[in-house]
Amino acid sequence: MSEPLTLLLIGLAFLVLIYVLVKPENGIISLLVKNKNANQKTMLEDALKFIYNCEYNNINCTLNSIAGNLNISADAAAGIVAKLQNMGLIQVDRDYLALTSEGKSYALRVIRVHRLWEKFLADETSMTEKEWHKAAEEIEHKLSEKEVDKLAAQIGNPVFDPHGDPIPTSTGEIPEKAGKHLTEMLPGEMATIIHIEDEPQTIYSQILAEGLYPGMQIRMIEVNDKRVKFEANGEECILSPLIAKSITIGPLKFEKPVEGKLRTLSNLKVGEKGIVLGIAKSLRGQQRRRLMDLGIVPGTEIEAELESISGDPVAYRVRGATIALRKDQADKIYLVKEEEKN
Image (tube, rainbow, N blue to C red; front, top):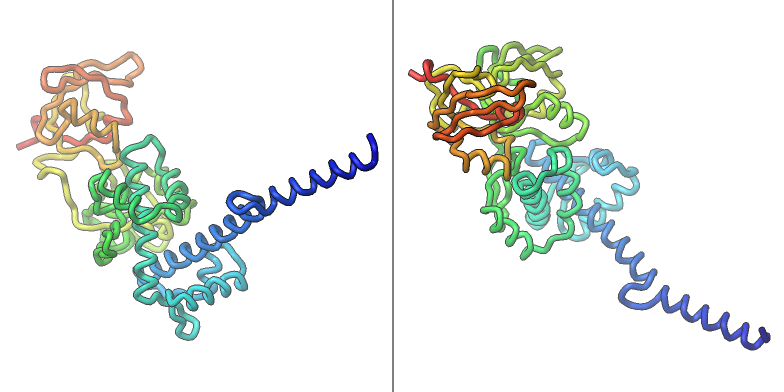
């Protein structure tokens, strides 16, 4: 190959490289800038969320606490705080940070997306509890207000997310914090779990492993600085005080007034009958709708009819039809035995 042709090809290759690097829409440099801006936006919004959550829970927010929450250096956190202050979203009083009214509105918009998306994933998909938070963390920085309002309407404008957290309205309204920590209960006291904190993930995973969820009825047995022992839907549970503080409880509520000893459907023996009180709130989406379509609603009589060789599933008689339910489903259907209903 002649030298002029070689130089021409090298020149053309160089021009192509320059074009790929600098073309306006999707050139490499343009994509890198967009990615950097997106990462910065994510950091700023995560910081706003954290400051809001501190204020909602009456906790002082500092530069170091932001650095710890975002897992960044103190210098990086200082840069984020300076940026938020310049944008008029926060104010700094000595070592403590607080949201301005504009900052609070911005934080609530991000939180609204997060909680609506978790509600959507819980009710409309087969994703597990451990997956909801991470997926919502990603989507909360991407949806426009119009897309968020459309999502809210699609799932019925829910008031609470699956963890029991209130979902801000489109105008930024949110109820005051309610309930008290599980550790504040007294022995013998009964209550309903109304909220489970989903951060940090290590503590949340331990709570899920115990089978606890919002809507579950509990009775306190023992509380001290070493352990918290209580009964949850008939099963004894023991947590450390650190983990128990991530659970908020409220007044005891049932989907229907109880007129006997609370049981789960899985406790019925073949030939025994019960009256359905309700379905655990942890059973969501299509599974919950299927059970209700089959007639498993408060007030319905249900009878254990036939047990498989392995004991799971079990056939039940409901409104003249026989249905098979797995134990993990029957564990989440509450009832009173027929002879105990009066």
